Image (cartoon, rainbow, N blue to C red; front, top):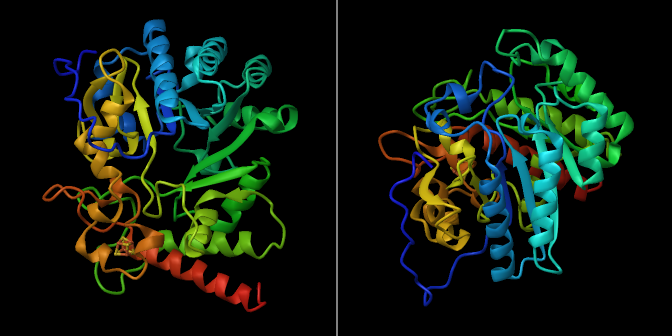
Length: 397
Ligand code: SF4
C-alpha cells in the first residue's frame, strides 16, 4: 500500500442516504502484462501508480477483498454482482488462483446473491487446461483483440516486439471451439483507419457471443488519435466508423452477435435504463481493487493524469460504502448534475449522457466538459435513432 495516504476511516454519515451500491468489482489480480501494446494507456499513459504496486495481489489482499465484496453485497441486499478479474494480464496469476478467488467470493457472498465472474484477458495464455479450470469454476472469459486478422493486431506485441496474434488467435479459437459456454465475448478498441465492415466480419469469424466496441481513451488535452480539431462541421471519423458497423449489424436480420454499445444506445432511445459507461446518465457502478488492496476508480481515468483514479482508500481500512462517499466517486456517479452546461442543454442528453467520463477531461477545468467525441457521439446517436424510426415505420433496410 505504498501510495496510500495515512489510512483513516472516513467520517460516518449514517443520516445521509448513500447512493446506489456498487455492483461491479474489478479486481486487479495481477498488475503487469506479458504484452506491451503500443497504445496502452495503462503502462504508457500519464498515470504511473502501477510502478509502485506489487506485480501480483497477495493472498491477504484477495481474501480481504472477498470479505469486503461480501460485506457490501450483504449490506445492500445485492441479488447479483459482477466480479471482473483484471490486470495487467490476469492469467499471469495462474488459472488456479483465479478459480480459488472466485470460489472464495462466491462462498462468502450472502445467500440469494449470484456472483457473475469474468476474466478479461489478452488471450495469449489461454490453453486447454487453463480454460477448462476457469470454465469449471464458473468463470467466463472475455478477450481483448484489435480485430480478427494479424494486421489488425500489429500494435499488440510482447515486450520483445513479437506479434501476439498467433497465440491470441489460438486462444480465441480454443475458447470458441471447446468452451463456447465460457466465452463472454471480445473487447475491441475502435481504429477509424480500419475498414469497419472488414473489421467486424473478421471478429465474427472468432464467434464471439458479444462485442464491446470501445472508443480509445483520450480527452481535450490529449486528444484521441486521428480526431480532427473541434469546430462546426468537423469530420466524425469515429462516428462514421461506428454507424457503418451499426448498419452492417442492424440490417442482417438475425443476431450474429450482440454489440453492447448499439444495444445500449437503442435501449436508451426507447427510454430504458442503460448499463454502459460510454452512454446514458445512469450512475457507473464499478469500483477497482488494485494489487496492493487500494480502492480506486475505474482505469479509464488514468488516461487523464497521474493518480486520477486514486481515492486514498483500501480494503484493509475501508468499506465499499466509504468509497461510495468519496467525492471523486460521487462526482462520476452524479449523472446530469456533473455535466457541462452544453450537455445539460443538449437534446441528446439522456442517450449520450456526455459520453465516457474520462473523455470529458481538460487540464484547465477538469471533467465539466462535453466529451471530446461529442460530434462523433451525436453522429452515432442520431443515426441509430433514424434507423429505429425507420424500423418502427416498417423499413429495416
Ligand atoms: S457530449 Fe455532446 S452529444 Fe453528448 S450530451 Fe454532451 S453536448 Fe450532447
